[in-house]
Structures are given as structure tokens and as C-alpha cells.
Image 1 (cartoon, rainbow, N blue to C red):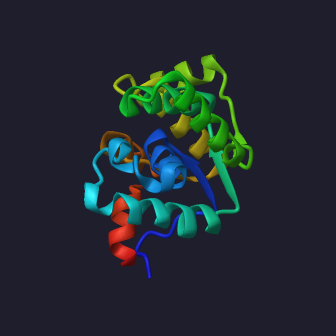
Image 2: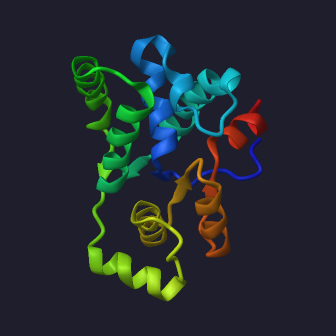
Amino acid sequence: MLSHTPTQTLVVDTGPLLIHAFLAFGEGRYIQRVSGNVPTQDAVYVGRFIDEDLFSGARRIIVTPMVISEFQALAQSLTGFDRDYRAMFLREYSQRLIHLEYVSPAFDELVRIKEERDLWRLSFTDTSLVLVAQERRATVLSMDLELIGRCTSMGILALHPYHLYLEAS
């Protein structure tokens, strides 16, 4: 039993989304390129955990347009795929992305929460996750330790998929 059980609504950051995507693409051959602070030898297992336990157990999975933008930029820069292979990857994963819910916070709302909560050190992408999680009473799923810390200090449940995987194993 997990000590921190995610809510039924997840707001997903770029890192877990990349691991999820590259688990499915190329039979997991490229997952190590995008595993971030997840040990390489555990990346495939964490990807399966995200897919089979976290995503399949969630009622709603929310991403913001900023996460999708980061996702595309990081997938492109971390993999070194040529244009055609990159396009094939994005086309293939887009079939899984259609099942996600997209929430687009207004720019003035992002600035407002940055001012009110002194979130200037967080990117607009991370701030969008904080705002959506706060509004929807959702759990943030991220590999960004600074974001997790800020969410926790604000009373927002934020969890690292690798830590959840270790706890569940």
C-alpha cells in the first residue's frame, strides 16, 4: 500500500509523459534517453508503472499546452531523431495523447499565482501545473524535485513516479 495515494485526477508534468511515451515507442529502446533522474536500469519498470498503475488507475489525466510544448522540444533534443523518425514518433504517440484532458490556464492567472505564491523560480510550465492542480484538487505527477517541494509546501499532493514505483515494489 502506498503511503501517498494519488487522487483520481493527475496533472502530469513533462518527465513522466516522456517516460510513458518512450516506453511504448520503439519497444522501449529509447527510454534511457529521456529517463531524467530515474536510474537507467529502472526506467522501463517506471514507465510500466506509470502506464499500468498510475495512468490506468486515474479517472482523469490532465496536461497543459505548456507541457505538450516541452514534451515535443525535449523529445526532439534528447533523442537526436532525424525529422522523419521524430514525425513518426509524434504521430504514433499522438494516438495516446488524445485520451488526455487539456487545460489551458490564462496567462494573467499564471502571473497572478506567481505573484501571490512567490513562484518566480518556477517556469510557466510548472506554474501551470500548480494552478491546475490547485483548481482541480489534483495530484501533480512530476520528476522535478523543486516543483514537488513547492507543491508540497502549498498543500498540493505532488509525487515522483520513481519514488512511487519503489514504494509499490
